Each structure stands twice: as C-alpha cells, then as structure tokens.
Image (cartoon, rainbow, N blue to C red; front, side, top):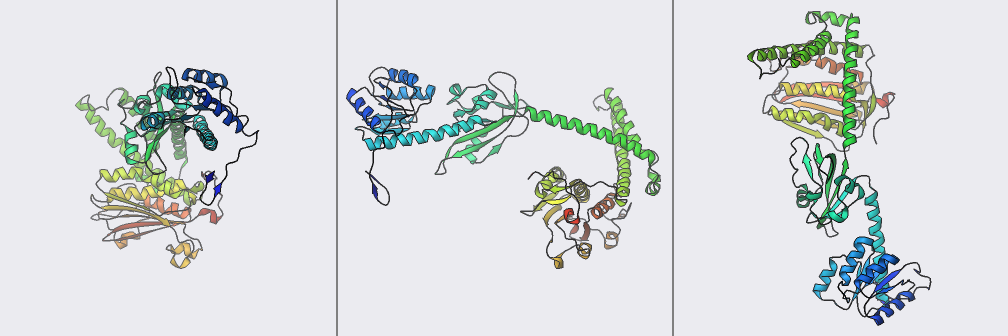
Length: 557
C-alpha cells in the first residue's frame, strides 16, 4: 500500500497482458531469489528471457536477448561483480540497470552511484517496490533517450561536460568535427578534445570553459577561431558555451554548441567580391554620367572643378597600383619614397574631396527633381542604431571624447529608407566628432516620436501637414556653439561658418544641405539648437507607409 498526500492507495496487480512486450534480464547468483524475482516479474506482466548467475553471463545474455532492463545483483560469484557488468552493458548496449542487493553500506552505494544506475532496490524485494522501481527506471530511460536523440540529430556539434570540465557527451556532428569518438573522449578534459587556436596568431585560446563555470553566463567565442581536429586540417568554427544548472541552481556542467564556419566564410568572400564588382560598375557609370551633366549647380562650383574628379579618381587608382608594384609608396625604401608617399596622400585627399563635392551636387539635384531612389523597408531601429554607432565608439576613444548612446526600449520598426537615414546620421555624427574638443561629450538619443498627441509634436511643419513623427533622433555635442545668425544659414549650399568660430572650415559645404534635402524627401524635418552648453541637431522621421508608399518586405520578423 502507498500513501499519497491526501489518502492511502492500494497497490493492485496489473492485468496479465500488461507490459507483456517488455523484457527484463535477471542477474542473481542465488537461485531461489532469482526464481522468486522471475515469478514476481511475470506476475506483473513482464517477460524474463533468461537468468544469469555471473557478470560474464549477464553480458552474454544481454547481448543475446537485448532486454529492456536488467535487474542486477551487486555481489556476484566470479571475477566480475554486478557493478562492473552493469557498466559494460550500458557502455556497449545502452541497456538501463536496477541494482538489487542486500548491501546498503556507504562504500557499496558510492561505488554503485558512479555507474549512474536507474534504480536501487534492497532485498528482500517487495512486489510493489519492484513495480514502481521498474516503471520509474523505464520512464527515465525513455526521457534520456529522447533527449539523446534530439542532441544527436542537431545539425551543430554538441559537447556536454560536467562541472570539472570533463566530457560526458558528444553528438555525431561533434565527433565528425573533432575526430574524437564519444567512447574515447568521455572523461577527458574539454581542451584536449576541443582544441581551438586564434587564426591570426595560431596561439591556443584560453580556457573559456572555466570562465563559463565561474561567471555562470553564456560566452560567445570571438571570430577567426580554428578547431584543430584529432586528424585533418584546421576548421574555422563559430560557437558558444553555456552553463548547465541543476534544479537548485548549482552549476552541474556546461554545453558547447559549435558549427563548421567554412561555408559562411566562403559566402562572406563572395559578398565582398560582389560588392567590389558593384563599386567598379558604379565608378564607370559615374564617369559616363559626369560627361553628360550640364547643370546650373555645376556652374556654381565650376571654380572647384577644373577637371572631372571621377577621372582623376580612376587615374589615381591606376597610379597607385604602379607605384605599389615598384615599392615607391613604402617609407622603408628611401627618403625619396617618403616624399612620394606624402604628396601621394595629398592627391588622394583632394581627389576624394572633389568627388564628394560632385556626388553631393548630383544627389541634391536628384532629390529636388524627385528622381532620387528610395527603398522603403521596415527598419529595426535599435539594431540599426547599434550597428551604425560601432565605428564611432572607437573614434570617440581615439579622440578622448565621451560618447553617450540612449535608445528607448520597445521601439517599433520604422517604415522608411534605411540608406538615406544612415547617410543623414553619418553626416551629423561626422560633424560632431570632427568639431568636438577632447574631453567633451557627444550624445545620440533615440526615442518614440509623438505619434498620437498633436499638441506636443515638436516639428511644426509636420503638425501643420497632419503628419506625425514616428521616431525622433537627437545628435548633440558639447564645447561647440553656433551663433543664432549662423543657425539660419547652416543648411544653405556652400555655407561655412567663418573664423573665429570653433566650427572648422572643412568639407565641401554641402553636407548639411544634403541632410536637409534628404529629410524633406523622407517627409521629415530637422531642427538645430545651440547655446553655450553645446549644439543639438534633432531629426523627426515619419512612417512613410502612412503616406501611401509601398514597403519592400525584406524585414526579418
């Protein structure tokens, strides 16, 4: 009889055909006890294909009959006891074992626990306890086999360790990539089987498993990591290691998931090659376009365009190749090469500036005439801003400036042209970083626009035209003040704030003009405020879908 929390329940014998298909091997050297066990099992509906009296016979019968479960006496006659026999049966046949013994001393129990048995029954065996132990063991075995099948079927390599860093499991993909089989890798240190080095330095990567176990957090390995298999060539891999916690929160081990990154590397190389090809096509189209342009905007800049900058750019690339082949750009060759390199840098910088001037003029013209292309998509704002700000974080550190980024939580996707918005923000950020003194602050704030409250909407023209701001982005910097009379002219073409103001005279004078024109094309607004505390540019971006524009469905939900 068993007792639940509320009331006792009686144990009842199952029907004769219950579990008839389940086979249980009995291993017991006392014949009377073995027969009693066999009769109890059969009365419970199980099948007993054989009885073994020694460890060697147990392995032989288990191999022959492939039972679903083994009832194993620990102390057996002969050279092999039940614990050793159960260990070999599990290792080679993956058949679960329940120990049946009259010994419950601590040393016996501890030795039995090493083999991770599926149950432990003390003699004399009661039929009720026998039934519960068998059903519990079989359910646990089924769950573990399901989990094992899932891990084996995963397309990535999976390695599981204990809390000492010793390997307990490898799936087939992990075996293939490392060159180690589970049988030979079990209980070895992870660093011995999963041997990784830095691709550039060829130095071994530190013991990341220890960091995972100590910090109790997931760690993603850096890129450019090579796995050194037991045999064969090194393999580029991408992976992560996560701790495994028990029900009480204690660290029980770690799981490593990794994959072969060879195809990913090839795809990246192909993408870079395609990008270079597109850039070359763009340069050739640029040359053809410049030969056909006769525009008033170009006349206004004719003093700065004595020749075609695009042709200069192409000639510079050819000359760079020739000089590089002759090692004339290396400062280690001679003092003459140092002079060549210095003047070469001047030619490059001036060519780039002139080409930017022409491109800005062409873009302004295209935007004003309505032929500038827009690719309206769903933009995941936090991801877009985070990726955009990565190079600027390094720039701020190099120039000893303090960069602050504040992105409001739960921002919805924005419907707009990501390329145009990226160009706008880069122009504002380039100005902020170029003109902010060392030790001053640069801030980027992204928040939800006033989409539902017209009374509090910042952009006056948006309110008048009954259009609402979806996202508001502010770029601010301290240590720089633009006088009020200059703020009205700052978006005019070729306007530069004259000395002695701290806003340096650099660039083409068209950057903020392009920003203003692009914002108008995106049906948004831009405002500038400046005082002794610093300067702030604020852009108000509406959802273009609400303006009837078609959205390209390339946003990954």
